[in-house]
Structures are given as C-alpha cells and as structure tokens.
Length: 129
Image (tube, rainbow, N blue to C red; front, side, top):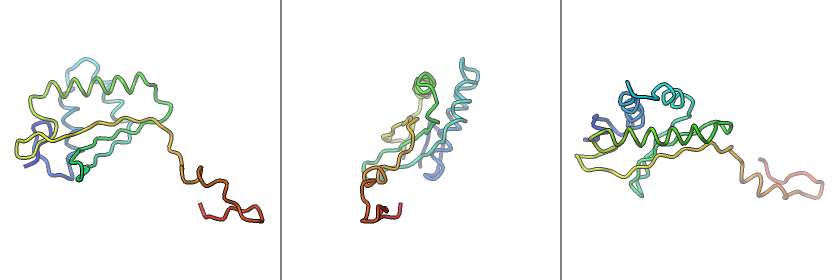
C-alpha cells in the first residue's frame, strides 16, 4: 500500500494527498497563512518517473514571484517533512525517492527560437509554428 506522510493513498492521488498532509501539518504553526497562500498561488503538478523511480512534486509560479517567497516555501516544506515521523512517500513501508521542484521561469518556445532563421525565398517561414 502506498502512503504519503503516513496517510494511505493510491498512485493517482499522491500529489493531492501530499498537499493536504502538508496543509494539515502546518495548522497552528507560525507562518501557516503565508504558506497556504503560496500553495494556492502555485500551479502544482505531481508525476512519478517510473524509469528512475522518483516521485516529483512540481510547483510553477508566476515569473514575478519573489525569490524570498520560493525560499520560504522550500524551507517550510522541509520543516514539515522533518516534523512528520513517516516517510514522504512509501510503498509497503519502504521509503521511496522523491524531489520537490520550484520554478518561476517564463515558458519559452525553444523550438521557435532555434528555428527562427528558417525562411524561404519569399521571406516566409517554412515551418508552421
């Protein structure tokens, strides 16, 4: 059975359960309102890399998000993980590898950048972008 911070979960709900457990662990802790506000601002995604066997929790923020907020969220999540006596993700009580990723980078179309110089004789782009 899968567990996330001590709570049973099925694989498709691991991301949701992780978020809920963090919010639950943060209750009555200093800085909890700021933590919850940042959690709500993020575009949160969870995925499992089955080849490397790593559970990834990904937070995407607006590029205008200050670095102080990202660092605060990182430190707060680390503190909550330490407070929990259970592993972050486990399968049959065996701890699993995981990572938490924070990004506030702008989404860029690298393909379009690399191939911007491709033009035909009439000066039109030869690819549909």
